[in-house]
Length: 200
Image (cartoon, rainbow, N blue to C red; front, side, top):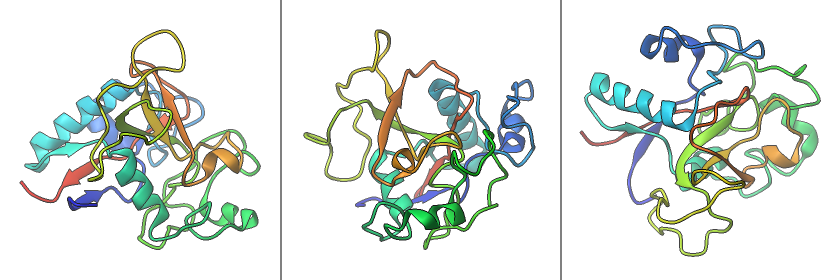
């Protein structure tokens, strides 16, 4: 990464998001204050970041895909932040085999080597980037790739989501797995974690 940044240790929680939107509707799958906020769209996540920017006095935004994967891997090179041993995933992630079909408190699993929690599983996380099928032509400085892109289905250009969720298996929780969603869609298992610029 050419530009230093600070990323939230956890997915944004219901309690945190509702300081911005007191009328946010929680889903049955993530009802607790310390559960990850879900049932928000990419557009709403960006509005939260604009609100946070004003309060923090420095730019807040969604991470680029490159920033997200860099934070997820925490220096690792395997399928997950720890190694390639599928059996260890339950120490770090809420995923389909153990989640009971719902999101769980943030910080209730082990963090990766850089102190980030729930980078695998619990809730998908929005990135700033538009949807691209490969990295061919992507920026080489870690910034978001917002030119061009497409969508999985008819509608607005999709935005990337990463990390997998409580309803996904090993494959979709991998550090490298990529998916996308329409920017105006709210999902029961999609949330976000904001990034702050290192400079004002």
